[in-house]
Image (cartoon, rainbow, N blue to C red):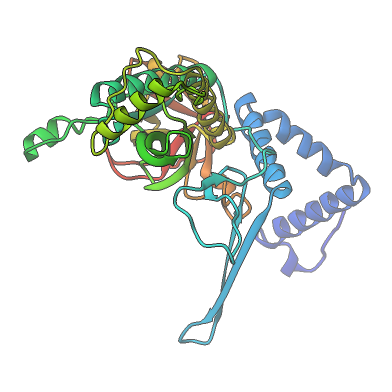
Length: 403
């Protein structure tokens, strides 16, 4: 208790100030005396977090830990502005997600467009969720036919290979396969067919290419088949996977020559003389066992390479529009979305490849599906920052992805 005898300290302005200063000193002394108060405050703050916020924080920590374990490339730059101030810029690219690159990936080996395969280690696959489907357009093209392999035979072979490939992709991984969009002749037709309801994210193309090679057993050229397989990302316009698989001739080779009698040898020589300059039309009614086995092995190899290319590649759903707390997604029940599912709303230009950069974690939010139709879904944000608004059908990098 302080008593001021001087009249200068007995006015109504300075006495409350002195009381406030005494209260502040008391609070600071108690804080020094009890250093555990800060920990108690932190525990109270953590208790006030909702389960959605705690889940989002756990996801952020997991993404950072996965990025720290993967390979990373750092690019730093610095410059001086007109005032002489130093500015720095650091870009950290982490190989958390599989990307398409050359199989060898060495500077002394040139780029080969038909040998593009993923090179990222299979250590970070948290973005893959088998409950959701990828949408792709698949196209099978026939090569050039010949008298040795007529057009109808080539079509039958292409149809068989395409059916095996589609069934294998949809069985091994969840793919929603569509046919490519039809070619439009006018701007109005292009406007009508430009709907994002059935718009694919990837393009799978298989070409059944015919090739002629020389056969020492037949002593002439014969037709073999080469499967040219390519997968392209329609958003980034980059090739994810490009490979090929050779197949033998569909026809069984002729029997080995055996010793003939004199008359049979003369008759065979006359037949060979008559066949000079002519094409021998195949008379077999079925394909060889070697060819049938090679088809199964070839299609299985292409499916396995597709599985490896997309095993760690995230499934993303484009955002059609985002206003206030309502997010419209260009995906629905056809791709596996259900009411109550929780997805991550991310900036795909930063997450997850640039997760280690400054302020990248602030580009992640948690949303929950409220309404689902066949090709549309509406969600609301339950945790994290506000990443909107996003204009309708704009080319935004904000996407939704499962985790």
